[in-house]
Image 1 (cartoon, rainbow, N blue to C red):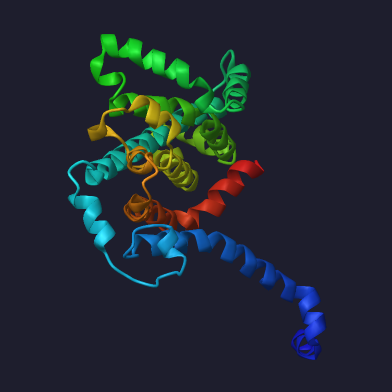
Image 2 (cartoon, rainbow, N blue to C red):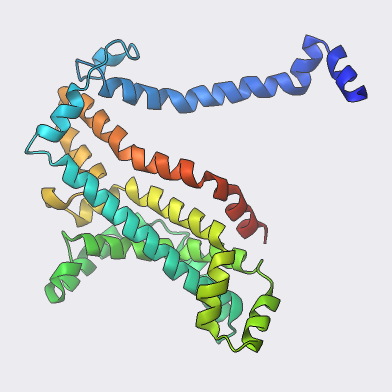
Amino acid sequence: MTTYRTYQRRGPVQWFRQTGWRHIVGLIMSAIAVFPLLYVLSTSLAKSGTLTGSNQLFASITFDNYVKLFNDPGRPFFRWWCNTLIVSSVTSAASVFLCAMAAYAFSRLRFAGRRVGLGTLVITQMFPQFLGVISIFLLLGAIGDAVPWLGLNTLPGLIAVYLGGALGVNTYLMYGYFNTIPREIDEAAKIDGAGHARIFFTIILRLVAPILVVIGMLVYIGVAGEFVIASVVLSDTQIQTAPVGLYNMISMFRNDNWGVFCAGAVLTALPVMALFLYTQKYIVTGLFAGSGK
């Protein structure tokens, strides 16, 4: 009751000094973050299809840009969109599985080179992946001569490149989360005759579900919007991902393509938004437990 009366006696100036300024800062930051998204959505629904004619948000609403996006035979957006879903889904699922096994080995097993290997994974992440674009191009070209389905202009080749870049920091993040699981659980399972494989698949994976969801979401979002490596590996129009295909759509600086480009950007972002909204309840738990340890 005392706290309530004290709150009632606060004047506008005191309220602003204590909590009001936080609301203003939050509104400003929200406006900065939301305005570009609203502008892209407005441009995708504008009749003109140009950026110069979309200065007024939602002045006109039409779905002509979305119709053009799917009806142009020279721009197979649906195939690009499917390729993006395939690459992002397979990469995120494989990254979660491989990182979980590596993190379990570093957390539960003791072997020669354990600390060196864990440190190497972290150090390699200090260098951006696009620094090795030339090496990746030459390596995939050489692999393609022996294994054509894993070389350049192939989705499996691009997935393999993404997996190599996602294992380091994600393994270290999972390693911190795995250390929060009491080792007594492993010891009790070993007394009952369970081996490492059974402990990992039937016990540990269920306990570390939050971090698995977080890693899968982060990898999916990163791969779905990646452009540099995908543009180098994929040159065939039919197997390009959505970011590469949409860039080529406006690469000639044709101002009338921006409406169609924004329509494709909106559709490409929908799966990412749905995934983020579905998994947001795991984000705080997974990241905090992994980093706090």
